[in-house]
Image 1 (spheres, rainbow, N blue to C red):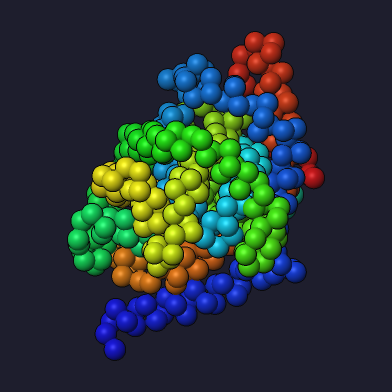
Image 2 (cartoon, rainbow, N blue to C red):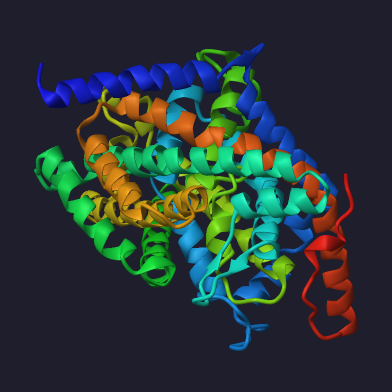
Length: 478
């Protein structure tokens, strides 16, 4: 047996163990899906539908209306958003949507969109807390994320031991998630699209991505933010325009496609698991696409230049709107309108290959462009996830042995390029979703403080009072 065969065997074993651990079911629902859905519903209600009433103000913040060079931090609102989006807008929106529709039918799209909408509120709380409890280090760099608001926030509530335990659990899962969902999955799924237009051995593709990721991560969050702010908006725009072109060319069939989605979400036909199965597949892929409830985006937003934690939370809220609301919906419409998801000749294709085939049926040359987009999405996701994992590693080991983590990250990229798709998807989902357990526990405990901060912020905005730095110690227990 070769070394590569052994690696794939080990990964398959790990994926089986994680699938059994993470996707334990209560009836037809995986526990983790119920956990995330419950957290999103709680956040939406507790924040008073901030995912609706805060969108306009969030866009004004993103345009730089309230920016100041005197504020502490390392990146702008746009760079922080782009970095976080680079970890969410990627193969989850291209390959993940195809996987959801293949497993759950067109109706899964509606549940993906609903999951993303509810996830906006969760993301708001996470990233507000990421800013509120961030730490400015002696060299001026800003670090934050669930590790810091779990430990610092719960300590302020008189629960320091619980906070420390949850922070360590999250950091361990974050390191594992960066190696799995955000590295192995990305390189594995992106290879399918790239190999269609550029014949290249999978091991060589993995080596190329390893080198590129290593070069960017040397520059830290500023380099990651610079690269992400260039790649992500450009790739999103090209992809959206191509998808809109296809949707427009099938304009007469659009009402029927939307009806298929609606009907399939409630009364699915020939779908294993019925309506509940469709719901589960849609919500599961929505979480994987938007990362709401996972907490990782708070690490990027903690580095933004602002004195107002709520302000950064509002900006972060736009992420699920872009990835689950726009990109995922456009991908789904292309798959449904072209009929690619039911084409028997495409059954053996991976998620990214199926999406490429759908685009090619209308724009024959687009698979070449899509391969470039998929590559950029995968690359941007890996560099953002690498930064997340490095921050978590530094929290665990107090900024020591960073070279060990980077070696593990680069090694996972190579392993992902040579592994089977099923093993990678199962292992990725398992490590990724485990992060939600400690993170959402912290969200439940700290949500009251965020709600008070939000109320205070809008009161001051309405009365045009000068911004104030919120005091983390002002929270009361839930």
